[in-house]
Length: 157
Image 1 (cartoon, one colour):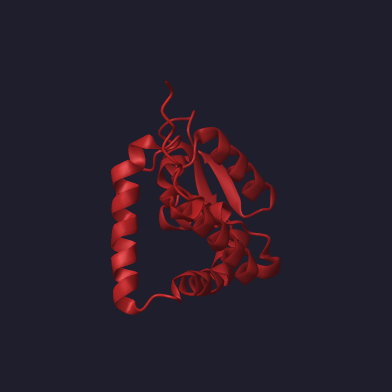
Image 2: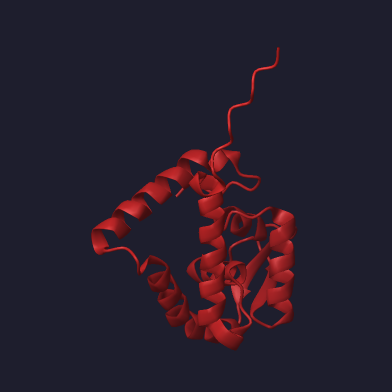
């Protein structure tokens, strides 16, 4: 005789569902704050990472922002087409392309940073300072502990 399957938990009680919803909300707030800049969260991450590490190669960039190299290539292509990034051949290894912000890319990034900071503030607005610190600490632990399960693991920080 078949035993009845245990009932599935409510979808809104599943952490994966809540994380997906928070991601949707985060992207929505980001795009709302950035307005007509035409910059996506992933493009911002790429520009900021290149600004923080001028001359970074594309593979390292991919690991830094936790994207596969193919997707990162498309992001870099779009940023280069917009005149925001420049690829240069590495003087140490001609097979490696290093990434550099252009003046236009630096200007876009400079303009975007305050809006991105407002977006981060809005995401965390429902939490008081103690809850924010706890949330960010636990979020960091979840990401770092589960990083290896990602289809594009980020580099350990």
